[in-house]
Image (tube, rainbow, N blue to C red; front, side):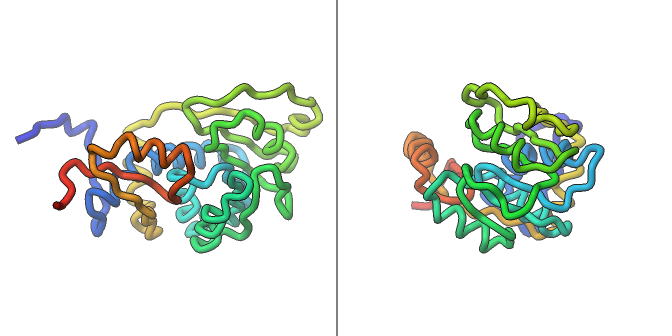
Length: 213
């Protein structure tokens, strides 16, 4: 028997198996926290997601269910991720160096690419927000003040709270959020990381400790 402090436990949504629930507890939660940060002090109707991987494909489903228009930005040439975004209901999908068809109210950067920060700032309207949601990022290039001017906000998020999980999991369940999974055995962890770096799958990867024979 395993005993855990109840203060640090969350109730998983009904209808999700362990493998399906796993991405919600990391990628799902960081996307949710970044999303709420993006909406602080502003109405967000048009939301841009830079980097359409585990976190973004979960957040897109929730944002669309709540009535937002979602624009997905992927690595140039990543047609598989763009197709997934459109299949999930995103209004537009294109390369990360492309301009969206209309100004965004907010943008969230999941891709750890500092060069995307000025591009995202140019993509949002005056008073809009750019949220950096990764735990690391390559160097951010020098900014032109004109890109930040107009009361645009640039902010990062870090860490998750118990309240985030308590708020997110019921909302994700109500919205019907479902991860697109690539399952690996625990002994395949190295291959999973290599495939992640190489863009060999869309959605989220999960390690299964005791895979079926």
